[in-house]
Image (tube, rainbow, N blue to C red):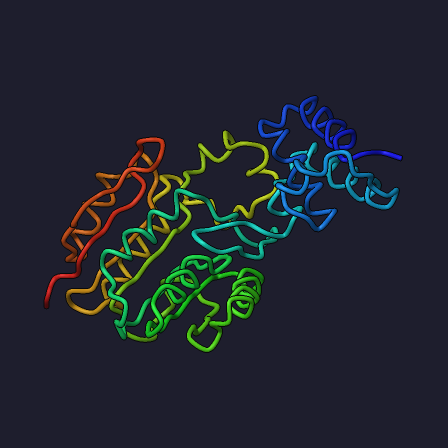
Length: 283
């Protein structure tokens, strides 16, 4: 019979040969998923035996990972903020850098605020659902152009028991006209067409290009979000955007043109500008 440490090592070596950067952790996460256990269990019980069915399932998933498929899609799950979200290939995988948008929202919102929040390009719904869970009296709307992404977001809203506090709409940002919001938050596509081909194979071969492609300059969707937000946001309301590392000046100009005051820009963990916070002028 095969033991946990043996099959783990086999998976690790397979991923290492395929130049998977996180081969050790990925092999552990996949086995924990197959065994329906946590990582701590693998460490404390590394001499336990695994069944033939478990070995078969594990090797199949390791093969998928060795071909570049992200672990989050294999496990159908990704951690974001304090919660776990269902993900599949219809949405981007939530990333730690996007948690900056949550951190900045926490500075603006108060515990018992009865405010309205709009999430533009909601994807998995991780941003709006996280905010709704943090603030019990908050109400939200979320839009996405993809009906398949919205299906994922609705699944997550149900998992996290907040589906009654979020309205979902299939719409492009420039065709959305419902409501006036205290806070608009968005992680739109902002990668320019040239840079797309240089993304890691895990991203370019598996994650939806619709959620990545920002046009020739990378700013085409961002500009639409800012322009439409100018009409959707209440006077004095906040707009929080995730942006590309080299888009600072263009985004600031666009915000000022649409009568926003730029409060601050926040850098990500790699020391690149990643988030901008702006306030809508009183009319």
